[in-house]
Amino acid sequence: MNPFQYSKPADVHEAVHLSSAASRFIAGGTNLLDLMKENISRPEHLIDITGLPLKSVEQTASGGVLIGALVSNADLAWHPLIEQRYPLLSQAILAGASPQLRNMASTGGNLLQRTRCYYFYDASVPCNKREPGSGCPARTGLNRIHAILGASEHCVATHPSDMCVALAALAARVHVEGRGGARVIEFADFHRLPGDTPQRDNLLADDELITAIELPADQLASHSHYLKIRDRASYAFALVCVAAALELDGDQIIDARLALGGVAHKPWRDRAVEASLIGQTVSRETFSNAADALLQDAEPLEHNGFKIKLARRGIIRALSDAATAGERP
Ligand SMILES: Cc1cc2nc3c(=O)[nH]c(=O)nc-3n(C[C@H](O)[C@H](O)[C@H](O)COP(=O)(O)OP(=O)(O)OC[C@H]3O[C@@H](n4cnc5c(N)ncnc54)[C@H](O)[C@@H]3O)c2cc1C
Image (cartoon, rainbow, N blue to C red; front, top):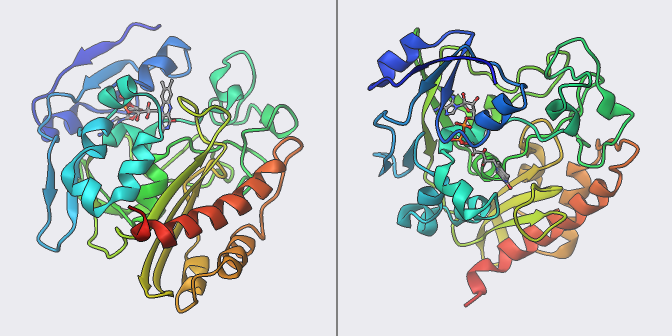
């Protein structure tokens, strides 16, 4: 590990003004410290944000919820407001990592965790995400866990978060603050596709701190389901995961949300497919058509073609389970 300076600011203003291109904020440290130990990330200055007052979960005036960036994944998953009004988010968080990690990991840090691509974590091989312009061995190498949607010739990595897939489906908004002031970013725009700059995972500037995540009010709590498919039953990242939520009037779909994880460089939400579900009747055929539409542009690499079939079945299953969720005891 390289030597680094350490600061612990007491407020957001100070944190933001300490930051630079060579610094990193540290929250739970569950990803950043691993990256530093593997020599993948070499910050010259660690800004410890754990003392900032960003640990509350509050109702907003418009009926939504505002989640402080330092609320732990565990506290968020078990918070009564989240369990009752956004069970999809609770399920997604609890499908990830382990209890110990969820106690340490923060909401803001979860959004910014880096890919689990083997080549990114191996500093002895090229990787465009780690060393721009060096190449992407995953394209022709071991690519079983890699992207089937939205990849580029420069990068086929996937975003590893479970929480973010639920946040995408719930149309969350990311509140950030930088030296130029505060702004709010729609969740769908927050993470990027790799294009020819895969080193950039998201739209955050170097001096910007995530302060909160906002969930808008919705009517999706009764019919939602998070499905995670992975190699082991616990403590494993998703091969494919699906966040599905429906607002129903009897058998008729009034609103639909569908986001996938494990398939792309960002949580994959397809609004055209969601719109196509509205007005339809709940049926296997309806959900099967939605799955086909969502995956029509999927492109397999040598070892990950199975993900297309898995995602198709996962979408049908998650939507079906969401539709019947309110009927379960
Ligand atoms: C063994 C293991 C298994 C895991 N399994 C899963 C899993 O199955 N599913 C899943 O979703 N996740 C999983 N995780 C990832 C875990 O959820 C993340 O490591 C965690 O959410 C990151 O949060 P943190 O607070 O520890 O972030 P840190 O490690 O402190 O920071 C991560 C990044 O975010 C930046 N950052 C942190 N907070 C802010 C902020 N407020 N504003 C701006 N930048 C910030 C840091 O600078 C750093 O770049 C796993 C992790 C491990 C180690």
